[in-house]
Image 1 (tube, helix red, strand yellow):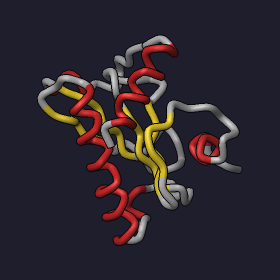
Image 2: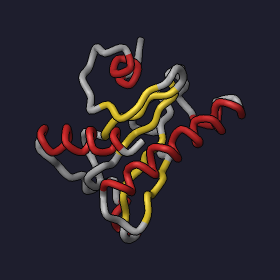
Image 3: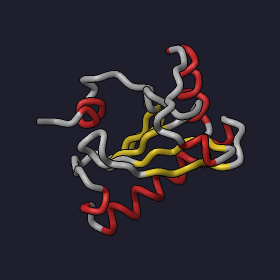
Image 4: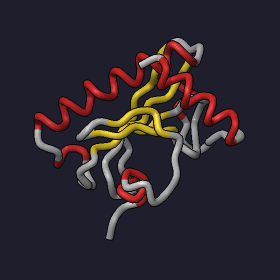
Length: 129
């Protein structure tokens, strides 16, 4: 059965898409830690990030770096935090979230933004790639 992320890639579930190439996909998290919190996923459905082959893992980080640079241009912050948890969806993914302190990466306290704000963020981040 396809993961929710595979369904997003296939267009079966809508998302706020940031970027896509032939191997990777990036979109705003619908339970963001901060404005601009983005998920980067491989298009191949692999549950555990360290089960990816070395080349794919490295290329995924390079893809994520481009997204992180664009997020930082749009959302004022000290850094873009990076996290790999891997328990909530059986499809490996990297969290990229603007942070100013350690508490900004607390996954127990997601925020909520309107659809208009999410769409605006997605467009601004895309335009900075």
